[in-house]
Structure formats: C-alpha cells, structure tokens
Image (cartoon, rainbow over all chains, first blue to last red; front, side):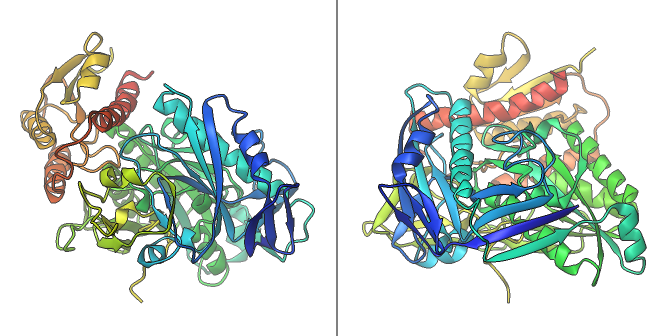
Length: 427
Length: 127
C-alpha cells in the first residue's frame, strides 16, 4: 500500500468576510462559514471562532481536541472514516494536508476539564500546539444537553471544521509530497531478511466518557486487539474521543502524525524491518485486559516479530495493560521497548507507574506529569479559565493575585505524550 | 449464568442508577477507604473484576470510586492483590486537592466514575 501526503505549508491564518481559501501559504477563513457549519448541529447553541498564532499572548483552555485539516484528493476513502467519510479503507492514494495549522476545539463538558495550550511563555515549551497556527472553535451546548451528547457534538464539529478547511487545499499544489509505502508481510520478509522484524503495539484509551478512542468509527473498548496498516492510521482511521488529563492523551492530530510510526518508516529497510501496527485497548474490566494483551502477544508472534515498541495512552489503569502486554510479548521471546510517562510525585521521588515487572526493562519516558510549572497570565484567553482551579494537575486557589497559575504539567495538552509527539527531552 | 458481582462504591449516582438491578454496596466514605474495602475483600478471596485506578481523573482529584468484585470468595489471586495494593500506594501519592468542591463539579465526577464502571458492568454482563 502506498500513501502520499501532500503538505501545503501554512504560515498564517487570517479572517475574511469573503470566501475562505488557501493561497500563498495563508489560510484565509470566513468565520461565519465555520459558525454556520458548526451550528448545523442543533445541540450546539453558540459558536465563536478565534485565531491563535505562535508567540501571541493567548491561552486556549479547556482544549477538547486538536485536528489537522486534510482532504483526500486521490484514491479510495475520505477523511475520518466512520465519522465524516464512509468506512472505506484509507491509507492509499493522495491526501493533502494543511501543514502547520490546526483546529483546536474548546468547550466545557464537565467542570474539571482541562487541557491548556499557551501560545507563548514557559507553558508554550511544553505543548507542540504552541507552534501551530490554530483556528480555535469555542462551542456552547443547548441548555440541558447531556455530557455524552455534548462530547459527541464537539468531537464531530471539530472533524467537520477540519474537513471544511482541508477541502480548501484540494486544488492547491503541495509544497512537498511525502511518500510512504508499506509492504505485505511476505514482500517485507523477502526484501529485508537480514533485518530485525519490529512491530508497533499502540494502546488506545478506552474506558468511558472522555476516555475513548475510535477506529473507523468503532469504539475501541468494543474491539479485539487487531492489526491495522500504519498508513491507515496516518490517514485518519483512528480519532480521539478523550481529553481528561491531557498531557498523555492523543488528540486526533497526534494519531495522524504518530511519531513512532514515522520513525519506524524512517528506519524501515535500514536498521529494522517494520512489519506491522497492532492496536489494542485499555478497558477497565480485568478480563478484557487479559484478553487484549493475550491477543497483542499472539499477533506479535504471528507477525514473526523480533521486537516491538509499545506505546501507552494515559496512566493508572493502563499501566496494568502496559505491563500485561510487555510480560506476555517478552514471554514469546520478543524484545520490547515501552513508551510511557511518569507520575512520580512533585519531587519526582515516588514510584512512576502503578504496575511493574522485571521484563519491562527498556523504557522510554515522556516525562514526569507531576512536575510543577507556573504559567504567567496571558492577555487573551479563548475558552474558560475558571476551570483551571479544578483540573488534573491543578489545585484549589492555584491562581495568585498576579494571575499566575501553578499547575502540574499534566494540565498542558500533550506535555508528556507517550507517542513521542512532544517537546520534553533529556538531551 | 452471568458472573455474580458486587459494586463497591462511594458514588451516589452509581447507587441510584444500579441499586434496583445489581448488588450495590454503597457507603459515603473517602476514596481511599473504597480501595481499602476492596483490598480487604480481595484478601478474603473475592476476585477483582475492574481496575481500581480506572479513569484519567486522578485519585483525590475525584472523590468517587467504584470497583466490581465477585460476590462469592474463592481463591485469593496474587496478581489482583498486587493491583489493589499498588492502587492504594499510587492513590497515596496524590494529595486531596479540592476540599470545597462545588456541587456541579461533584456531579460531573460522579458521572465520569459512573460511565467508567458502566463500561465494566456492560463487559461483565456482555451487553
């Protein structure tokens, strides 16, 4: 299978009263078009649209999702299969990408929601989305809308806006075209018989409201561990339905740009033979955990892996899935490297994970989510700042008289991402 | 026959939603006490059915926790003992953050805990 990503580099977003367009690297948006698109959903009462550029004194919170605008220009399927497009298999043909910009949705679903993106200052260093030109879509629900319906409305609205913007890039010649090819198992085995066979085991958050992920429109907690072509993931097969404790949750943007997949493609044919992408879940029922991790190990063995990389999504409950996956895959004689983050206490001295095993002896960390940071006030806040008092990583009265907010970095969107899509490093 | 289980909870919404249908053991006790109550049952041989650290809302940030265990004790499972003991150790790393939480936020935390345990209940009952 072969996928081309046609990157149209976006250097700015501007508002207009006329038609929205992409021209000379500038995304020009008529906010009324965005509002009328969003307000097609009768569950959304009001919608406001803002622009947040890198370096501006802007805070976006609470962030629901971050989505990259895209359009399918050649080949089967469409963007966000199972939601916006039909469920045709994606991952081939050409997809145009508005690179460097993002749709950021915000809206209060529950009173302890979080997800902070600061476009400047110390907080900006902790989120990759301070570097993107963001179209912020703030939405309020109709009175009495239940939280499940509210989450659904915001999620779909974000996808619709991203697809609307992506469509503006349909006829634009991309600045660069990246080509990715993924071999069948037999082709890959013939091409690189001397290289170690490595698969990616990606754990998907799947516990309930604000803790869900969807694959081709299917709730991941209702799935068995399976194999997906990594090109399908890069082309929008997996989307986010979660945002609680946003430091280590994967917004849809991260699924589209999964760094583990990209790095495995870079090494494919050089240092390793990238043989597959296994997706598994993180359910709360222990029998589901046993079943799903059994299947991860079985599929890794079936692919003839010498090694796997396992990425986690979240903390606590998924630590158990992480360790089950690791133990069972190692027991098959397959080496593992796990990517996680840590909750090691504010002083970094506590045990990092809620579960452990001697076989988990190669670990990459995304950082300590309990690390404390002081975020100075921003001139403009898009969203609702009053939730900062009740978010993960915050605490009561954590805003001082000068407007400084003291939080743990777990409140910052993507701060300790467990797929390597973030800025923290020990280098 | 479906597995028989008890819902150990301090969440009034879980009590309200499931008390008529399921065996719900509700007590108005702190988060940590729910975990300790579950630990004591696991030590007596009840089987742990759902993960005690379900949800990304951290211990003590949310006051509510619901866990499923089997109704009848059998053999104590060391893996499950490890999970519940580690959950208590983990919970103790997090200080109580919001002692004066507004009622609306409490209700949101109740709802999240309720959806998490509902996904566990649905899985056990295969519905």
